Amino acid sequence: MRKLISYSLSLFSFLLIHAQNPLFIPDTLSGTNFSLSIQTGTKQFIGLNNTPTYGYNGNFLGPTLFIQKDDSITLNVKNNLTQATTVHWHGFHVSPHNDGGPHQLILPGATWSPSFKMRNEAATFWYHPHGEGKTEMHVSRGLAGMIIVRDNVERSYNLPRKYKVDDFPLILQSKAFDVLWQLAHATHEDSVMMVNGTIDPFLSVPQQVVRFRMLNGSSDRTFYVGLSDNSNMHLIASDGGLLSAPYSTNRVRISPGERAEVLVNLTTYSVGTQLYLKSYSSELPKGIIGADSVGTASLVISEGYYANKLNGADFNLVRLDVAAQTASPVTTIPSTFTPKVPLLESNADATRLIVFTPDTITSGQQGKVDGPFLMNNKPFHMDTINIKTLLNNTEVWTLHNKTMVAHPFHIHDIQFYVLDINGVPPPPEYRGLKDVILVKPNDIVRFICQFTTFKDNMMPYMYHCHLLHHEDDGMMGTFLVLDPNEIGMPELQKNNLDFEIYPNPVSDHLTIKLNRFSNDTNLFVEIRNVLGQRVFTKNNITEITRINTHSLSAGVYFISVQSKTQKFTKKLIVE
Image (tube, rainbow, N blue to C red; front, side):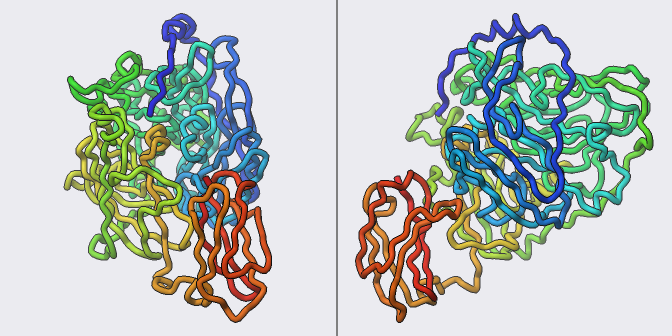
């Protein structure tokens, strides 16, 4: 549920004197071994007021990571906060153990070091926290960073790719402050617009074709981006990489979690010209957070939405100051890229239906606009698996929004192709690979995807709404990718070693019961946390063994009964 926080917007109207500030461009890290420090800091966003923040390797946001496709990389993430968090590699095709969802908790002082091969195509991705119930708070305080993946296919096109010169990251975020200049969350009063953490920014751009990599890192606001003179941009890439061809348009809608890459041809503008990249939010359809209205005349979204000066308004994102050309400028826009060929619906192995509904039992009719919201009438639970699919399955998922609010749906691990929206083929901007799709009220969206490479019978991936307070309130589900060759042959049967644990979840004492004995002796039990660290072991267990779990912190663990030759593992929840 949203928390009611008091704000003094009059302070902002007094203090925000619209001074222009140079756009901050994050530093970069590249190679195959990356180090990220999650840390606290302070930043002066408004005047000389110090605001407490979080950041990666700095006070706010994080460095841009450059990764080459097919490289094997390691990311060493040290949590220097006083509370646990996670880091999710949004859009990456990685194993569930490397995904950085709520099950990969990084405890205070701990370092998480996932290693994996980069399998994604060239595209713009990002990294951000994904802890259960804490995602919005951590993102709002500054934890977000961009990732740029390169490959030889993208490199073969004549595109701007000189970082900070003609290729610019734009992390779009609206923020809320309280009267003590603290960054706030779980509120509709996010009336301060930032790009890369900069308020009222300007950027010097050369008189040539430039590339803007836009990431919507906001908690819930959707932007409708265009140029102040209404000239066309060329959309070249969405979440998962390049489209089949550039799409000429004067507006690009980008909801939370989405990425969009656009080319802007400035060759016809005189040096010294100033124009703005804007959000034309007055043109957003009703029901999208950021539009002029959400809900109905009798059932309106609450807690300051209509007092927010950004909602339903057209406002500047960044001022563009046209400067002289650089050496070897890009002055033309490619006409085509490698064609994208969606998976065939006729080859689908399964279909899924995900229905978005309000939790009216908890919140009554007001829940239809304020939430909490559910998927298939079930709130998220760490120890619940909502969907089980099979390795290499091709599936069609149908998303049906039965609420009054638009929800950006995100699925981990895979990229998908949109098949249709309300029975109509998708518009050009939705014809590339996606991992986020905005589903408006009453809309039905279908997409097709395939679950390849990774399988695990215990560690799930997530799917959820990317409005962060909706996610935190439980609008999220889990899925396992299973190996079809192992279905019906659980490890306990193959190893002739079966055990039970109870109660599960457990709070103080756990009982382990062996239902059958193997030929091996000297059985022992061990418990590991989600980081793979052993936190408990006991040798020479008997048919019934009772262990004390008082020393274990609340969370997810894996308990194994094993001998020298056999091992069987179950998931354990400690409350």
